[in-house]
Image 1 (cartoon, rainbow, N blue to C red):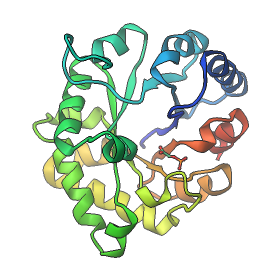
Image 2: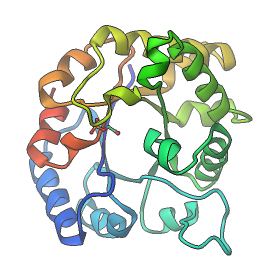
Image 3: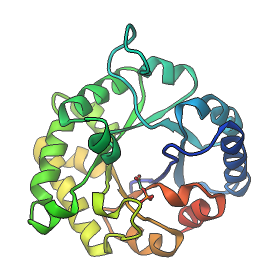
Length: 249
Ligand code: PGA
């Protein structure tokens, strides 16, 4: 049985005080959540403080990006070791907003994954098709390219520990959620790709989150699918009650 994994992607939201308040509210309400891995991914500036707030609980903390180089003249960038040093355990890599607005490619996604793994961070690798690609019947092709690109030269041991987030771009922040059938279909396809590239064991171990307008009201039916192991939550993770509403689903 794969343990459920729900992560809140706060994106570029929350000042320091707001982030501390939200993390405290989530911690207070989540005291008896046990069967779900819960992760908060605030902006870089809030990581250290959010780590302090959740210290001693099972809530994990993740970043939203990292750079693949270890250190040096890369103005504005953050390394894997820096994230580790403030207590991060996870890092989101290749989010569609990074691909769309910041030139992220499958190649740079792969480099970031390798840097994260080398530092002991768990990558949450995002893949997903645009509306245009779905309408052109290219969903599987797009997801296959993204998955094989992301996992290039990654060992089977490392592959097992990574998390995949299937996020159809047309569902992100739009209120237009994938149907449980659409989500299950792509999740099963991703698992079949992992089986082909690695093994049945890797495919059955990797946890695949759904992301894109997941809310307390639609989470249960999405999470009821056999290959949907959790969620990567944007908008609904910015409020403790709605985030916990998804966790409790
Ligand atoms: P959303 O974002 O829940 O606001 O659609 C999901 C994501 O981008 O991770």
